[in-house]
Image (tube, rainbow, N blue to C red; front, side, top):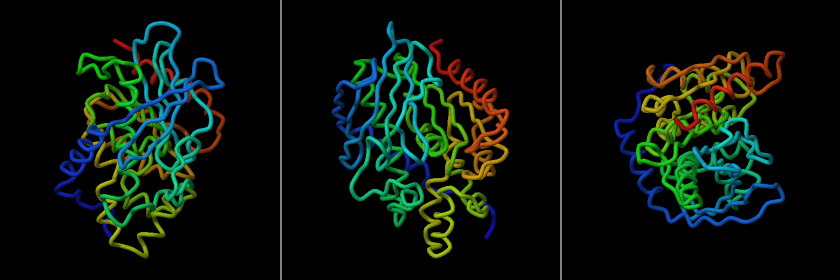
Length: 299
């Protein structure tokens, strides 16, 4: 097999239709107290009528920006505010099927199984639903704040941060929702499927690799969910932190996402490694977090 596949002719039509459906969802957010001070537990409805969860934190003073902070392929059990400005409202939504707040009967919670869920069709593949979860989370945040999001709409500046799984889903979701003003993607997954699946690794792509070897027809679905293809449509300032070495997300896929973002919109920060500790990690991550906060800050 060649190391690339042509993108589907109706790639943009597929994603434009999906985002329209997600934007029409009545998200009905609710919030309740949380043991952590300044934090609210949130529930909201996403595409397919799924009720998902997340956490919302508000700054002590005026809200000048907002940030969606996604998660990796393990879900989320703790909050991490270093990616958001001090004056930001921060929403930590959990994607469908993921621990701890969005476990769904019938959707596997383990990455190696989740990545295969619904792969028989582009209309049922779980990563489409996860992108819709991002768009519905933005709608829920607008309702919770009682404010428009997105500077292009005269609203509050909105940033999206996503690591690994959340980075790949972010690349799929960002181009189609003009409420997002800026993005930061850390070691993003799901880029350049053909090349990344050719590399043995310990992440979810190893399960996907085994599947497509037995079910080559799955390529016709995966073509719609290549994060690098979607990233070529990103039109907002975006930082991509791609690792030179990574045991879980092949670097070839990370850099494919980075290279696909139009040059005028991208800043690439090369990291020594991803998904493991290394001596330079603290300094590199501090620099990256500071750059992300600056990007997300209200102008």
